[in-house]
Amino acid sequence: MLPIINYNNFVDNKPIIFRLAHGLILLIILLIFTYTLNSPTQNWDMLGYAASATSLENTDKNYIHSTIYKQFKEYATDEEYQELTTGHSYRETMLVDPEAFSQQIPFYEIRIMFTLLILGLVKMGVNIFVASHIVTAVLTCTGFLLYFYVFKKYIHPFFWLIIPIFFIIFGVHDVAKIVTADSLAFFWMGLICFAFLKEKWWAVFPLLIISVLVRTDMILLVAFFTFYLFMFKDGLRVASVLTLLLSIGVYLFINNYTGNYGWSTVFYYALVSDMKATHPEVYSSYGISLKQYFYALLSNLSLFLHDIPTLLFEAVVFLQINIQLLSRKTGTSLTTLFYDSLAKPMFVLTLISILYVLSHYLLFPLFDSRFFVGQYMIVGLVLLVTITRLIEKRVEVEKANQKLILKD
Image 1 (tube, rainbow, N blue to C red):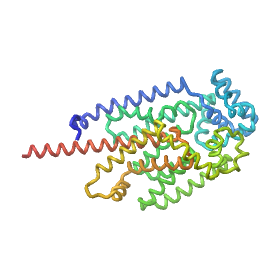
Image 2 (image 1 turned 90 degrees about the horizontal axis):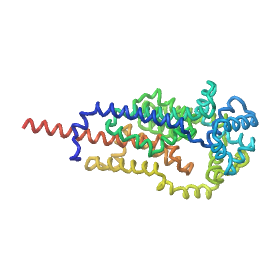
Image 3 (image 1 turned 180 degrees about the vertical axis):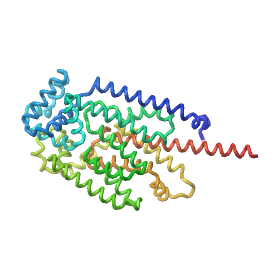
Image 4 (image 1 turned 90 degrees about the vertical axis):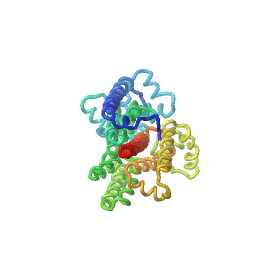
C-alpha cells in the first residue's frame, strides 16, 4: 500500500490529466521534429542510404559515386564534408574508390522500404539528403505518437507526463537525428503492437511478413510471434506457419535481389575488421571462426553494464519480474505463473522483446540502442501498464471496503 497516494483522485482525475499528457506528447513531438530538421546529425550511413536509393534507378557505380559525393558536398558544410570523408581509412577509401563504395550499397539497399521512402521524396523534388532526414524524423515522431495511441487506454495519463523521459533515455530521440532504417523499425513495431493487442490477425500476419523488408533481422520477431501464435492460438496455427514460411521467402528474395553478402560478411566487417574492411566481395568468402565469434561475444558483454538505454531496459525487466513474483497467489508455482502470464498480451510483448534483444546479441554481439528502441519502449510502457493495473486494483479494494463500512 502507498499511503501518500490518494487512489480515488488518481482514477477520478483521468480526463484532465489525459488532456495534459496528450498536449505534452504532441508538443514534444513537434519540438523534436523541428529541432531534428533544423540541426540534423550527419552520419556516414546517410551516404549509403542515398546511394542505395539512387541505385534503384541507375546501377552504374561511377555515376552513383560521383553523384552522391557531389550532392553531399553541395548539401553539407565544409566541416561536415571533411568529417565524413577524411580521418578514417574507410571513409577516405569510399571517397576515392567507386568500386569500394558500390560494394557497400547492398548493406543499405536491403532495407528496401526505407530507401523507397527516400526515393519517393526525391521524386517530388526534395534533395536526397534532406529527404533522408525528413523520412527519419517523420517515422520516429509518428512512431512515438503511435505508441501513445496504442497504449493510452492501458496506462494512467499521469504516467504519460513522464514517459518522454523514457523516449530520451532509451535513445529514441537520437534515432530521429540520424539517417537510419531503425526509425522505420521503431514505427513498424508500433503497428505490430497495435494489431496484436487488438487481435487484428488479418493485420498482424502481413505486418510481420513486411517487417523483413524494414530490417532483415526482424525475421527474429517473425519467428517469436509465429511460434507463440502457433503454440497458444489453435485457430491461427496454419496462418502462423504460412507467415513464417512467407517471411523466410521474402528474406531470401530480398537478400538475392540486393546481392546482400550475408551474416558472416556483416559480422566480419563490423566485429572482426573493426569496420576497416572496404571490399565485401573479397572477404565475403572468409567466414567466421568460432574463436572470432566468441571473442566478439565475450568482449562486448560489458556493454550490458555501460550502455545507459540497455541499463534502463534491464532495470525495467527486473522490476517487471519482481512485480509478477510479488503479485502471484500463495502456492502458485513459477511454472504455473509463467504459463498463466502467457495468456496476457502485454506479457507476451515483453517476453518477445526480451528474446529479440538477447537473440540479436547472440547473432550480432554489438549493442547500439538504436537497434532496439522499439523493444525498449514496449518493455517500459508495459511496466507502466502493470503499475496502473496494480493501483486501480487497489482503488477497487478500497472502494469495496468503504461500501462494507457504510453497510455496517
